[in-house]
Amino acid sequence: MGEPLFLKPQFHEKIWGGTKLKEEYGYDIPSDHTGECWAISAHQNGPATIINGVYEGKTLTWLWDNHREYFGNQAGDVFPLLTKILDAKEDLSVQVHPDDVYAKKYAHELGKTECWYVLQADAGAEMYYGHNAKTKEELRSLIDNKQWDKLLRKVPVKKGDFLYVPSGTVHAIGKGIMVLETQQSSDTTYRLYDFDRIDQTTHKKRELHIKESIDVINVPHQDVELKIKTAMHDGCEVTTFVETKYFSVYRWKLNNSQATFKKQAPYTLVSVIDGNGSLIVDGKKYALKKGMHFILPNQVDSWTLDGKMELIASNN
Image (cartoon, rainbow, N blue to C red; front, top):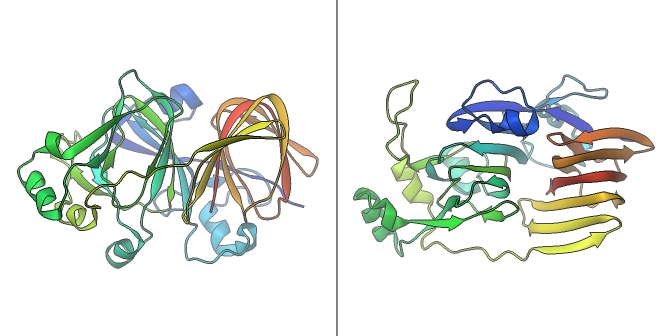
């Protein structure tokens, strides 16, 4: 017998954050500059708290460290995944994340490959994604001469789009965009460019990490061709966005319907991004609504979803 683990997120204020996490999901955010909801997290910088069951009040980090059977006794020092919702009222800094090898050596944690499902996007919204340098020398020259318009690539995005961001990819979420982010559990970010903004707390420009950025940026940039596929499963439309060694990410879409799933991975992370309905596990019904996040641990062999809702699921 198993039961889902529902989680209370952690929130992080950011220079570029806003209020949509409260307006869209009803979260109790700390300020009008709240940029990140760490929804399913066991990272030391923002662990989520279990809010039901026998381990109510414990953090996900504690459960990983003390009851690895909930995760199929998966190996590894840290819980490998992190789910966030980000509200970019303004552009994020242009940044890049290291791979596992570089991060282990210099940051003492996992690298950071991530992906974004676009929850909302203002008309004309764009992401910074990739760069135009052909060699490291050209990259260094464009950075040194602050030729950002020549260096950086932009791509338009709209609600429902999906972008995969491997480590080493120059990127920034653009103004007026909300995303659900699935990533490796890492908080290592190298800031390449920050639009010369002044932090209102320190009254200084935020620190840049030029050397580290140049070290880890993939040159030349190569777009990843995703093979997104959609199929019906029982009464649910299932879209598979990406399947990699780091994570697989899916959208489950029910339209006043019901669907039963069987376990395909040691555990599954789930976020309700729209609508409401219910989750049934071992005959017990749990109400679901937009903004809820939970884990289906290893003890849950099957589950049923019922209602009109959209969910993003991930596993590794």
